[in-house]
Image 1 (cartoon, rainbow, N blue to C red):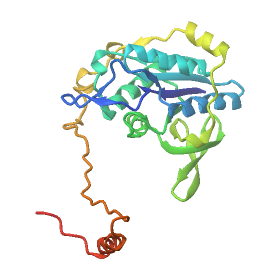
Image 2 (cartoon, one colour):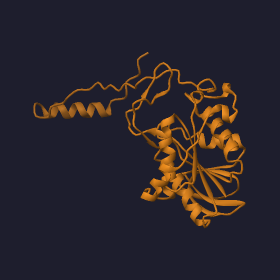
Image 3 (tube, one colour):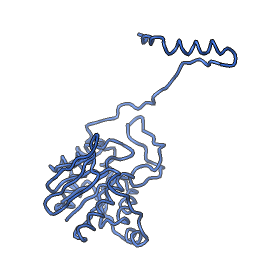
Amino acid sequence: MEIVVLVKQVPATDQVKIDPERGTMIRENIESELNPLDLFAVEEAVRLKERLDGEANINVLSMGPAKAVKTVRDALARGCDQGWLLSDRKFAGADTWSTSFTLASAIEKLVPGCDLILCGERATDGDTGQVGPMVATFLGLPVLSFVSAVERLDQGALAARREVEGGSELVQCPLPALLSVVKAINHPRLPNLAGKRRAKAAEVPVVTAEQLELPVEKLGLKGSPTRVVKVSKSQLSRQGRILNLEDDPTAAVEALVAFFTSPPSAPEA
């Protein structure tokens, strides 16, 4: 069985800044890490391989700058078998549509016999949760989102439990398919020394747009149909009064009662 895990490199900080001109995230001089929510997809892929008595091959796929190879190696250290990094200046500035198109095209070319694709619920930087389902759409595959357990898996189908509002549901699905998993699915293991050594020695091919034979007009910022046209910070302001109970308790209490019982004022035109 061929399993693909999609992982992303994200800033290892909450001090993320946006380029006001391009509307894209500034990633220079910021420490990065494997998207924490993707760790659950990596762990589930390893567990599924163990359930299949090792009769599975786990392929890691990431898209990003050259330094994102660290993210692929992190997944390899945790038990994945091989990985690729999609890295090309033509991929820069891609929105979720262009990113999904590139990833789906890479899966078709690099893992043509893919049986199952796993990804995290969302990335902690963009926070959209769109890429996984869109990759499945480009590939024409069924997608199960918010998966909290894979109950059954064989060569032709799987049964998975999805978290839904007010509970969960058990869904059966033919393979190949894509699953986006939630944190409740497992507890990711830490890489051991042997895994780190194997990941360090592993070859991680860097795949370019030319190698994937993709049209430039569908890649990166040029191929992104959505744009961030304006970036602004929300302003929170309050107009209030300080009531000192020590000076005049009665007046302070009366002012509070009047505030809570008076009707709201009409907004200014």
